[in-house]
Image 1 (cartoon, rainbow, N blue to C red):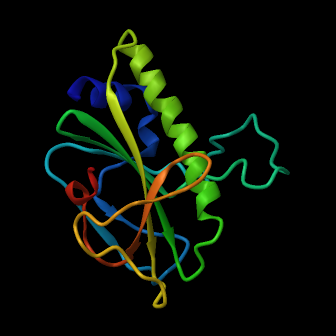
Image 2 (cartoon, rainbow, N blue to C red):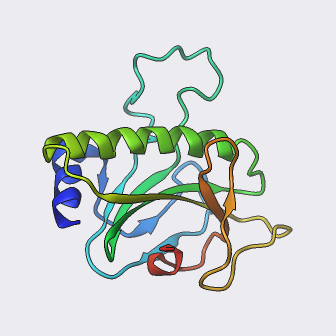
Length: 174
């Protein structure tokens, strides 16, 4: 797994890598920070920036085509690379599925490119979406191994988590 993590680090431009393990929503002033707690090395990336157009070849007029989740975390756990697609929302979480499914396609491309960089070595990879929200009405996953929900037709597994709480990545690696 270390080889895959290193390959991911090598192929992605350094301007997108985050040095912190705290997720923040820069567009919302009072959005609560989310501390990510992990064991070992992980790579944190923020691709959804106003500075760079990461999808320059796509038509901007097509809805949700150019959308991306807020953070992508690559986290090796046992013999599997978990790719966490993190979306930070307020009360309104609709349309997050479109952003997360686009992010999954992008992350799959990154993993495949890293594998090419490693002469197509095979790795176990799992994709999980973590939707953090400030909603007071929504039910959130509280126990360590609560069931994931699943988007159709992409089969992306996802959970709703409360913004402002610490997030233990190991609790979501299943």
